[in-house]
Length: 217
Image (tube, rainbow, N blue to C red; front, side):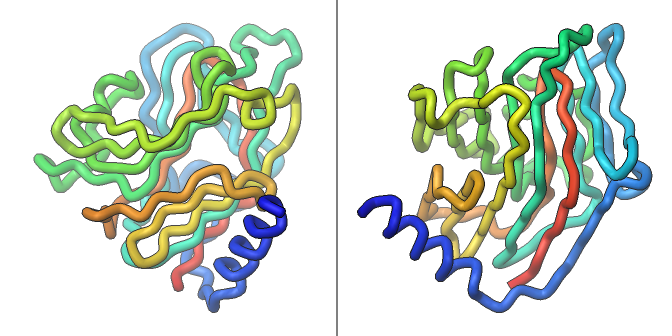
């Protein structure tokens, strides 16, 4: 019954009329801003329509397009585990509606996670802490990172070499996060963040991302 209700909820959200606002098929990184911790054997690049995050330390790849109002973000993403140097099943993470209360220029950081604590944003860390937690947080813009919800069960953690379809919907102050059309998180924010930037986030892993689409309601 619960799965049916969640499916109906997702259908109602996704049946809303969306106009495509931004797309990236990752022929290059010209539409992105890369913030990568200085670490050996780390790189971010595109390969045959895939964005590759291959890093030993932390990395944030921002879409260089400010978002505002009601939006829908979709993409496909996989954590790769083929025994290459940075392969680790962990940290399929995401920032959205990110803004810096103290600086109109968001892009001033170096990929180290703690450097983002002063931002306002929503964050999902899927399979974080070496694939032991999946968490939804709100960064309040003052160093506080409010934990909204957390999972530790296997159904909500990462599966080896599985490609996921991620959907994020921000609508009328509610942020919802879906994995393969299953609702993982939803949060009606009493003080919603209504504008900001979207970014792929990870640390110590190798991941591929494709088919990024952002729609405006």
